[in-house]
Image (cartoon, rainbow, N blue to C red; front, side, top):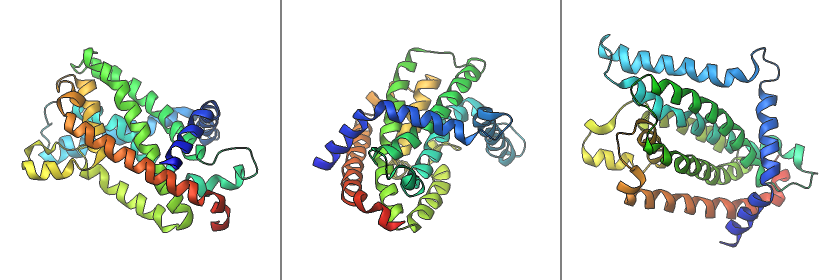
Length: 267
């Protein structure tokens, strides 16, 4: 618990630095492209088009699935943040520690600014999707008040997970490959591309053990406005999500604090 508090204090103390580094990270990734930061939007739009064609049109024999586009957009909006945040967060320390090893810089801020740089992209995509939803029969509603809560929830959860995976990946590189393999499966095991409502209640309950399920359904509740106040009406699921998040934060912080003085030795 002491390590968790220590890491939390470092995040608060380095918040301004995290924002600056995340902004630089986002610009540096696109500095050699003619379209620059626009690729942060173009690539997701291409993927959305492919997913719609395959899952909303192709597998139904050419008959479009009713209301599939807004349902897909609402869920995939946060997946384009979660997926790269988890993958890049897991390799954030061992790929950048040489750059910051001699700086007065808390190592716990490295996963933070990497994840925050992905969050900027998320804000751009989310803004564009909200505009699309206005023309698809889902105008801005009172349920948009839920959205900041789910955005913060996704940030905290991915950061807690990154403290675990980034430490383990620095010690054992195979962890990074395992994380990538799991995230490739997760897009099909979470309700991003398909609706699990037709499955049996038992299978749905098993799927809900995945915390990503909670975040994605929460985004749909906020953006589509037809699922009620999700985090209140499913309060037991909310408690489960935050219990998992807190446990990951404690475990990740403990691992990070224990090994961070030896990170360079593992390079």
